[in-house]
Image (cartoon, rainbow, N blue to C red; front, side, top):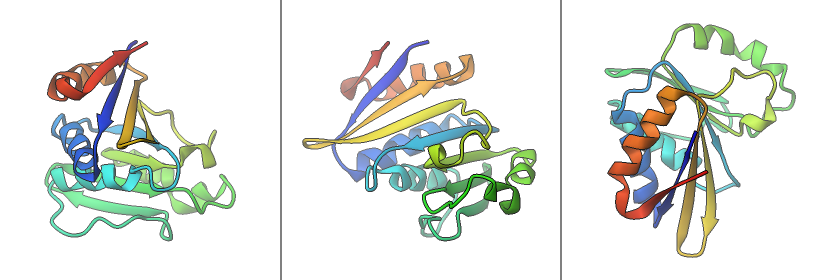
Length: 163
């Protein structure tokens, strides 16, 4: 499978990437969001969640760990596992019950809870670079590869496929 790399000049581009992916309506799906602090994981999530119909602020679930959204486009669960002390805490948060409901799970800091998480269908690695950010999108299924192909066309002027 090929992967996609997209240059993001600013937070508006990062939100636009989230919105573009949400418009593909990839539900149910687990998406891992990786990157350093301030790399744009929550910004991406805000664009995604607002494109699904949320009309309020999208806050980082850093302290609550999970923010559920019941939206016209379906359920979205935004997880931020940065403050997770032990991966086994996911049991007490009811992650299995959330996943059973379908919808989209956007999971920030998934490396803090593996192997207790379901596998991702798509992984997005956000990194700081001079002049902005880079998003590297990795498909883990044929369906996710179709999303990347669509996103590549949408962001054709600022993207390229990588092996």
